Length: 283
Image 1 (cartoon, one colour):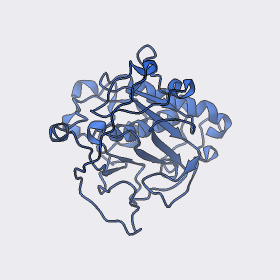
Image 2 (cartoon, helix red, strand yellow; image 1 turned 90 degrees about the vertical axis):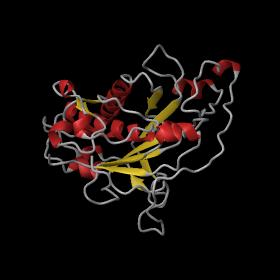
Image 3 (cartoon, one colour; image 1 turned 120 degrees about the vertical axis):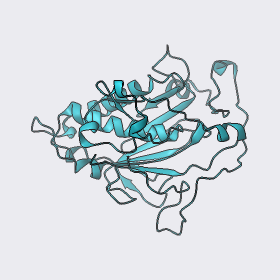
């Protein structure tokens, strides 16, 4: 997907902010608070996530990949809109499911709840294939006593211009657990559909998982780095650009991708997360 400007999170374009290089920034790394009930939680990238001890909050952090262990990161898929960290001055509308026609003559609004759960399930399936990642993905919105990453799926055009379909903070080494990402529904609605219910699930899941990948520290991947033997089954999720045809195919992490550059790992410091903007390619 096309790489846009790297911008320090929370600085909206045209709003007095500056374009910024990716820089290292010292931030105190809080000690990981461990209660007896949470003794099995692993540290992620040298940073811990301070979980609430309430049963409800702990339940949200249960990973669906490996026997109900507690995950190190919680990602919330937010379909109802709001202000993200990327654009704190903008209140985005939630996704308009009725705007997405399906091949059976209906729209995604005909069964929006099933669509949301199907997208979430496919995103979970994508990340369960990465042993080094331990995340839980939920549709729930509030009441979480811990830092969470939020992906806003909104009915809005790209804020960076150029038809970008997604935007997410890039957090090498996953040193923070409260990143933000956006999936732009207005851009996806312009794809040359209509598509079936299942095809829309694949499209939204691929874009959502790609942006989550950036928040965990995974960069864009060049096509030349993707193993040719895998192309028949899946498409590389973190390509710097996908074609429309590739958006309709299952995507996975295929390359030997590192989410923690050596210099960042040695520094043991938080990195000010720049932003990747992601779009389609004609190639």
